[in-house]
Length: 412
Ligand SMILES: Cc1cc2nc3c(=O)[nH]c(=O)nc-3n(C[C@H](O)[C@H](O)[C@H](O)COP(=O)(O)OP(=O)(O)OC[C@H]3O[C@@H](n4cnc5c(N)ncnc54)[C@H](O)[C@@H]3O)c2cc1C
View 1 (tube, rainbow, N blue to C red):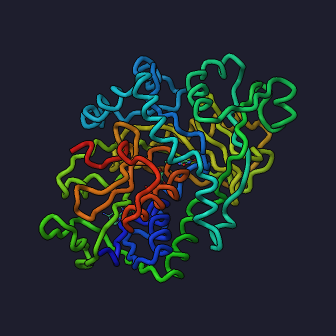
View 2 (view 1 turned 180 degrees about the vertical axis):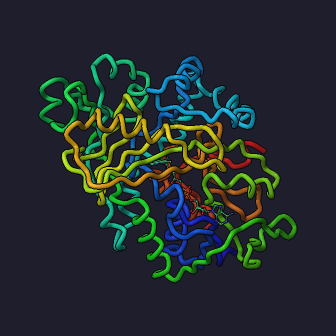
């Protein structure tokens, strides 16, 4: 019988899992080497992107990507020295850039993201974290109607999952978003979305709730598991073993070596991303906006406007590159020409990207070791739903969702 669960990783997925486990009456210890919400869950764009079921690997990507890498005005960057190590994953990743695979991935992502607002509200209800959530529209800002039409494949897919935008052009677009540059003439707005006013602060508030509910936190680095007869017994950390009845891997992009200890080689890469916070910004966006030309989001957070996005391949070890920051700065100024700010904060982090763009949610064999990682661009959005599903699985309840698409053993 499962009484004590060890949750490894204190990002949005780990914090959500821990809260739902505690609410179900289980004992929980969370282990993280840096603390609550200090990694990718801190630096994201903050959007609760309920319609984000369209993966990066849409049909046509294989044809477009090479020229994008050489185009300084495209949001795709590559550290060339990393290419040989990237190739096996990249080949697999691009093999999904076709219509059938994209539709299958979207159907897999939809149940994780579409009810995100309700899932975040349910998770944060009655906790200090609730004050970090804001309801809002979510807009995609295009230079022209033709640019919007060029995105028809993604919009059709979103429509099939119930998300149809309100389209504003010309004067209507200007009235709706007067701070946007005049050459942005077409805005597609999704209603009933939301965002987080400080994603790192939000996860820290969820962490406080874990501790209020009686959960323990241990700052330590996990390097292996102890299994007896194929069943989980303890996690091995730099501070010694921690025993429990079950463990959950919510270690984001760093999950690969731990999965390897379990005999599963997951094709997981980092999609490096960047943000700049324009602190104290005025005359910027009043709700999250995806600036379609730069494929990054501008979100009005508590400290200022956070512009977050960029896709860079270059591995986990290299530090930030300069060009993505220049790109974000240039495109932000072009999109919000009257925006002023007092200071800037730069950040670079790692999206956990499995080659097939679907998170790994489930039990590894019958080991009582569960996985909750691989959420790509949608981890903030889908973290609470993932945590709830995991808590149900671990507690022995049958989730009301077919979890086959997320099976951790699909790569075994
Ligand atoms: C620029 C950018 C913008 C983004 N914008 C959005 C957005 O607007 N909306 C959205 O939904 N998503 C967005 N994302 C994606 C989202 O941030 C991630 O999918 C999500 O944060 C992943 O959460 P996680 O809990 O899986 O991982 P993380 O937040 O990375 O947490 C993993 C934790 O595990 C710990 N850990 C790892 N290995 C070990 C170990 N061996 N021992 C102990 N601890 C360990 C780490 O210290 C870390 O705290 C964005 C990402 C980026 C980079």
